[in-house]
Amino acid sequence: MEGLIFTYKDIILEFLFELYVFYTLITWKLNRASRFWHRAIGGLAVILILAFGVAAVYQLCGQTVVGRIGVYLFLFAATMVHVWLCFEEPFSTVLFCCSVAYAAQNLCYKFHLMAWCLGLAFRLYESWGANFNLYYRILYYIFFAAVAAAVYFLFIRPQVRHISSWRMDYRLLAISVITLIITVILCSIEDIYFAKLSVGAENVFDRPEYGVLRQTGNLFSVACCSIVLLLASRTVEQRELKQEVEYLQHAIRQSERQYEISRDTIELINIKCHDIRYKLGTLAAQGGALEGDAMADLQESISIYDARIETGNQLLDVLLTEKSLYCEQNGINLSCMADGEKLDFMEGSDLYCLFGNVLDNALEAVKAIGQRERRVINLVVKSRGDMLIIQADNYFDGSLTFQDGLPVTTKEDKGYHGFGMRSIRMIVHKYEGELTTYISGDVFHLNILFSGSPAGHS
Image (tube, rainbow, N blue to C red):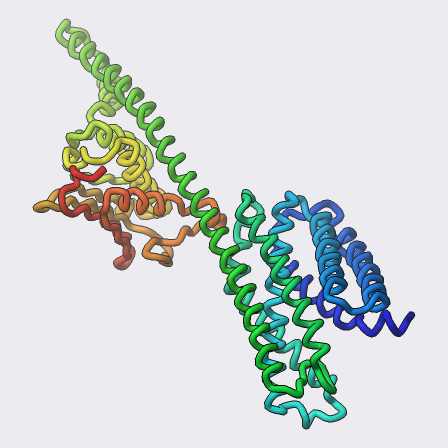
């Protein structure tokens, strides 16, 4: 009995080692359950006991295709439950992660098998002699590490960026099932039947067409696993893009509501300031007077009425007036020359969100500058022929890096920041415009160009 158990143990242990390597790579950002390490270590001990048990049953019952499929399905199910107990995540998320890890493990195994069979065909290992097992292990683990690193950076890493915020859907679950079916059935059938065709040693054949067929099967398995991993990564990317669009649309709706609040507030301020100015004029006409300092303070207080900006677009007037008041309070010089009438082709919520994000990004940059003379923002909206040009310039401190033509947020939580620039780009593209950003010295430049007839855009 003992001999039967340990005949198959090396294969099982290698499989579990490789599988847990990918489990670790794909789940390291998941929310861990309480007593994580106790669950991880205790569960791993149980998995090892189960693995030796199924290895014994498999060899006692005969090495059949059905038995091989049963072994790997059982081990996959057991390890998946183990992972599920270690993390505070929905079972659907754990199923997807474990299935992707299983496909990655099989991809690495098949890549190694392809290279190994090729070496056997060219008799590359005959000189290893008594050190054959040692050299095989060294070569195997070097090859596995290299392929695993490539699989991680190409397929897994892009998927785990925001894995804890995934919202699983049926497409991801379907991919998980496909992954499991492809990796288990193909691998089991090939290993069993080609082992029976081998002579002298496994994967050594007396007929060259068997070797060609074996490599064809390996290549097909690699292709299938690569396609599954690619589909998984693309599905996750599309899911993240959908969530981002939903967030941006929510931000636009919030901007529309914010505009209505700001408009009502500014109108109320202007009415009150106008009333105060009228009453002061009436008081002066009747011969009443205030002391010099009191009058100066009162005049300064109602000078907010003069801060109103008029561009010919009511919505832009409200936004720029609101931002100019903020700049006045924070020692920032906002210079604006805008022909707001040229912006009538844009929906109100888009216009408010566009200019709100442009100015908020500039305000955040200049507010961090110590020198008052550099706390300057320039905004220009002008037409030139049939083109509409929007330019925004501001000083900044520090350094900026760009990705896909946009500055990368400097905030630590990059997953939930940086939407401002992406929102600007989304709105510009909606109206078939072009957005460019660049730096010149310590000045950040943002240029938007709408060509043709913007009024015709929808």
